[in-house]
Length: 235
Length: 82
Image (cartoon, rainbow over all chains, first blue to last red; front, side, top):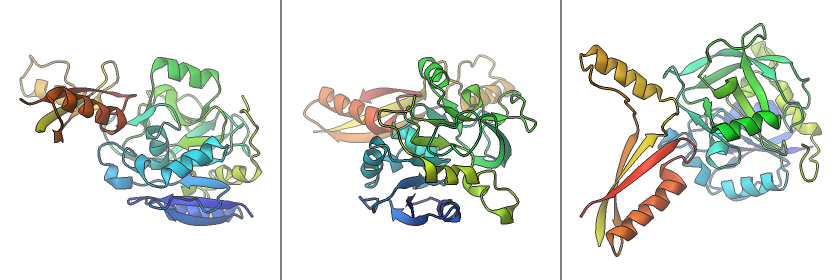
């Protein structure tokens, strides 16, 4: 059975959602505290949503220096699958494990509602159970989710197929006026070059339980079961 | 010796700064029509123990590069008192 470490920071608040979602696909999921320095033999690492360290300074800026993070970075460098959801995505960007940054929403207000996403890349540790073009519905809940990057980085992400999910209208047509948070190119989630590190602002962990009437996010968790990293990257 | 250091962090020019835009609109609404190009950032004050003002400035820059500013989205300015 695959072992899944869910890292809890002070201020994490989606830790149980991530744990439940990982267990739902049949993994042995457990919590790891941010002060720990070892992932206890994990096959997959999840960085859950929340407000680690109160979002002081910048979202994720303090969490990236947690004692557990060197172990997470080594794990990722060795090809281990790491998924950052919402605040977890912000932490991955602050830690330099994914490019770019998540800035204050363009409309300056917190956005918490279901959104539609189009799956753009399925060759990753967390989206290989979807098909390219699949439309997913899941909630967002963030104040700082506007993806920003310099032009060269943005071009590279698009050219290398590293945009994993993109915000679209509910009918799948392109989003009008960057309506969710003003993200560049309507980017909702990206991957590293090898596809083993993925971050996204929407919450698959809040769309993975049939009791909630939506299991569109379950694929993020079932994908990690079948991921076999390719040495030297897949693209 | 202890140096008092002021660090100013501002959103990088060219990046959308919705806070700055909102403040600019509010200033205009209040009649301050001369105000423009408003950017909202943050100010951090600290003391640094160092041999010279130059050393203190260098250490402050290292702190900005590592933690205080996000190199992707923010620029910073360091001022050392005295």
